[in-house]
Every structure is written in structure tokens, then in C-alpha cells.
Length: 440
Image 1 (cartoon, helix red, strand yellow):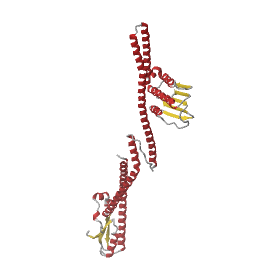
Image 2 (cartoon, rainbow, N blue to C red):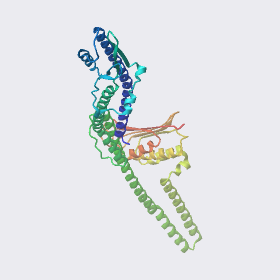
Image 3 (cartoon, rainbow, N blue to C red):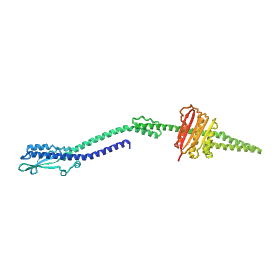
Image 4 (spheres, rainbow, N blue to C red):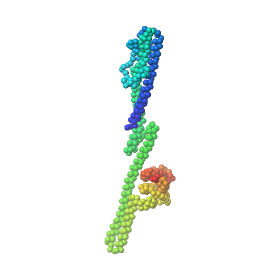
């Protein structure tokens, strides 16, 4: 379910709960108001009738014009029914209900707001007498039909107001949410594209500060992902190029060394077959043995170049020392200073640091003419630290160092261990530092 639908559902549930609470509270308040109105109207009518009768010492009947006029004034009290009865109980006069039967409330509504007249003392009888005898009575009781109709009309009006208010609030909130959630939809769309590998996304600025913060950081993340994706593609291409170069190198080694040595063996063997002198044959066979040993050494060197068996043969520190010396043997460097002091690290991490050293030495030979190279691979209780520094950069000093394929490859290896890679150039010098936390 979308956020918009959830918000609207929650909002309407809150409105419904508030409506029910308002009905519940208004029910008791309305019923109490009706009770007070009826009691005050009955008390007023009873007082007025008694006062009228006390002021008229004698009259012949209850239909006297002045008396009926006074009663008609009391009939304007809408909460009451007033009936004038003779001594036989016959109704001589009664108040009019003045009810609109078209909007009569249903029975269930009347039962909710019903009263027990006797329990509430809503029925009063005033006896009327002249100087000789009793001539009738006046009955005062509550007119709940009128109250029910008034409350029902007010209830219907309240429902109409609530209905239009709810519609208005929902439409307003829907419009606000629609405008507010547009940035979220754009962000979701951007994340969907990123998850599918599409990084050419431009997020427009958002006027809402919170969403603008999200957009800003998301744009930075997308930019980094795009750069990483480009770097990985370049790295993959570099790997393919290196593989091709290795194939070419292997083919050259096989052709330049092994093929020539094997051809030499064939020539010497043929010569040995044709030679009758035992001394000469022994000399030829000794040369064949020597050539075979050279082939064996060449094969071993080729295998070392293709894999890391040197670590198993010489140990990690010895393999690194051999790599450093062999890589910089043909470079005119006055000072090569290295310190290797890492023993108990995982085999996989040894492989990665060996490859990192290969890459850094290759970069030194490619991008500089150094007079010194310093390499340090050390550790303490928490971190393994790798440092390499050299001078003689071929590029202009004190300029920003652009990350190349070699550095990207090193960075990818370090990421596997959540390590940190730092590098910079200063005063014609390049320094690279790697820190990897030890596993506990």
C-alpha cells in the first residue's frame, strides 16, 4: 500500500474516532439540556397557571376568554403539552404540537433520547376551583416529540457539516500529499534506475528542505556509484588487456627461450647420433643436460609470473623482498629502503598485498624517475599499515593526482577488508598509505 493511501486511511480513522467521541459526549450533554429545559418550562407554566388562578377569585368556567388567552400564551412553551379538562375528564382545550411530520425522527432515535415522565416528574396537574366547587383541572406534561424533532434536525445538520468537512479535508490533504510526495516519487524513480544500473539521472532541486537534503545526498551517492561503475568497467578492460599482455609475454617466453632451447637440444641430439667419438658424445650430452636445466629454470620462472607459488616457497616476507628487488633491479635508484614486518595475516590478504606491491612498483617505473623508494608494511595491535613513497614524478609537482587504473585496482582490493586508502603528491613526491583493521 502506498504512503498516500495509508495517510488518508489513518486520517479518516482519526476523524471517525473524533466524530464518535463528539457524539458520545454530546449525547449526555444534550439529554441533560433537554431535562433542564423541560423542568424549567414545567415549573414556569405551573407557576404562571397558579398565579393566574390566584388572581381570579371567581369565574364560571374554564373557557373564559381572558383565562384561555393566558393559557394560549403558555402554549408557546414548546417543551410542554397543556390540556384543560372538565370535571368529567373531557378535554376542553389543548396546545398544538406544531410538528413537521415530514422530518419526524425514527423510533431508534426517540428511544435514545426518551424519558420516563413519572420518574423525571415531568407530569403536573393543577386543579381549578371557584368559590363553590371544583370545575376542572389543567394537565402539564413534557412534549418530547418537539424535542426529538429539534434534536433530529440538528443531528442531520451536524452530519451534513461533518460530511462536507471530511470531504474538504480529504481533498485538501490529498492535494497536499500529492504535491508533497512528488519529490518522493522522483527519488523512488531514481533509486529504481540506480538499482537497474542506470546512473545518468538528474534530480531537480526540491523546495522542501528535508527532501532537498535527501536529494542532495542521493545525488552524491549516484555520482559516486557512476564513478565506481566507470572505474570498474575500466578495471575490467585493464584486466582483459593484462590477460592479453600475459598471453603475449608467455608466447614470447616460449618462443624466445623454450622453443630455441628445444631446437638446440634437437640439433645437439642429431649431432650426437652422427658423432662416433665417445668423448665428443659426452660433451654433447652434457650440453643437452645444461640446456634442459635452463628449460626447467625458465619454466619455473614462468610459473612464478603466472601464480603466487613464490609465497609458498619463500614465505610472505621473502616473496615481497624478492618482488621488490626484482622489480627495481633495472631502475637506476640510489636508495631502496623497505621494511616488511607482517607475519600472521590471512593467506588471501597476503595475496592482495603482494599484488598491491606489484601494482605500486609498476606505477613507480611508469610514472617517475626516482632517486629513492621507501616501502613499509608493518602492524600494531589493531591495524596493518602499508606505506610507499618515492620522488622523481614525471608529472608537474603540486598538482592533484588523478586516480588511474592501478589505484582503482588497489582500492578495490582494500575495500574487501573495509580498509582506507590515502594518496597525494607534494613537492615532486608521491605517497600512498593503506590501513586495514586486523580481524579479532
